Length: 175
Length: 371
Image (tube, rainbow over all chains, first blue to last red; front, side):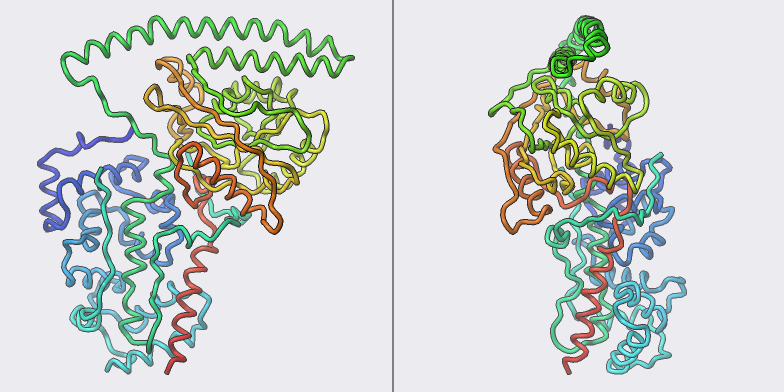
C-alpha cells in the first residue's frame, strides 16, 4: 500500500522541476516520488543510509559510502537535484560538476592528490598496493601536465573529462 | 524492526555470478595507454549506483502492486459497495463458520487418533495424514479457494523431494490439501508457531531459524535423515527461502538440490484478479493476511506438478538449482532475478564489491604495462 501520486500536488511537482532546472519531466518526478516513498520506509521525509543499503545493488557498489554521505538527510527536492546529473537532459558540464563533487569530499572546491587517491582506493580495494596506487596516479598526473602537489578545480575536470563520452545516464521508469 | 546486519556467517551467495545478470557496467573498457582521464572518470560506477537508487530488481520482487481502483465512477461505486457488503457481511461470517466447523471436526478426530492409536504406527500415520489434508481443505474452502491442479499427483516414494516457488504461507496449505507433505519452514511466533510444534511436528516437518548461523548444518543433516527414511512423508521445500510477490523468482538455495535425490518441481501461480495472495511479511502479520483473504471473493490459483529432475552428470548443485528454477519460472510465467532472498534480512557479502574492485585493479595494472 504505497503512497500514490496524490501526495504530491501539481504545485509541488512544478517546484521540484524548477529546482532541478527541468532536467526531469513531471511524470519522471512522480515516479521518483513513488520510489522515494518506497525507500523511505520509516516515513521520516528522508532516506537513511540503512534504508539505501537495503538495495543490494547499492550495497555492492564500491563508491556507495561516499554517495550515501552525499545523500544523507536529503529531502525529496534535494534528492531529485542529486539525481539530475544522471538525466538524459543534463548537460555535460552538469555531469562533470557532479563528478567533481564526489571527489571533493570536504567541499572546499579543490581536489587534491589525496582526494583522487581516496577514490582510487575505494575502486581498487586491496587489489593494488598503496605505493603502486600512488605511483600510477603520480605518473598519469605528470603525463597530463600536473604535479603531485597540484590542486584541481572544476575547470580542470572539465578540461580532462570534457572531451570523452561520459556514460552517465539513468532511465527513470515511468509506468 | 528489520535490523540489517552484515553477517559474516556467510550469507554466501555461492550462486551463479551476479555480474552475468546485472546490466553491464564494466567499470572500464580497457584499451590503450592509461591516462588521467581514465582514472578520474568514475561515471560508469556512479551510473550503476544511480540506476540502483532509481529502480532495482530486488525491491521489485517484494512490491505488492495494488490493483487499479475500478470503483471510481457513479455506476461502479455502488456496485463495489454492494460487493463489500456481500464480502464482509455474508461471505466472511460463512467462511468463519466453515473454518470453525473444520477445526472442531479435525481436533475431535486428531486427538483420539494421535493418543489412542499409539500401538499401530502405520494406521495412525495414515489417519493423521488424511486429517491434515482435511483441515487444509477446510482452510482452502474458507477463502473460497479455487485451485486447479495440473499434472500427475505426487507419489509417496523414498528419495524424492518437492520444491516450489513461494508467495505466501498459504502455498503450503494449497499443496497440503492434496498431499500430506512434510515441509521445512521458518519457526514462527504466535498461534502459527503453536500449530507448528504440535500438529505439523507429527507430519515430520522440520523447523529452522534464519538468524542462527549454525542452524544451517543442523538443518542440512535433518533434511538428509528425513529423505532417506523410508516411511517419512514426502518432503516439500521452498528453496527461495522467503515469500516473493508471484511475479519474480529469487535464487534457489542449493540445500534441496544436494541431497542425492530426485527433485520434483511444483509451480504455483495465483490469479491476481481475485486477490493478491502475496504475503508481504514486512507489512502484515499472517493473521491479517488470512483475514484479507477471507474477505475477498476468491483465491484462484494454478498448481503444476512438473516432471521430476535428477542431477545431470557434471552438473553442480547450484546449476541444478538454477535449472529447476528455470523450469518453474517458465511454467508459472515468472521472471528470474539474480538475488538471494535472504538479502531481505542481511547485507550482501563483501565478495561482490571485491570482485568489482579486483577487475578494475587488474585492468589498471594491465594497461600500465601496455607501454
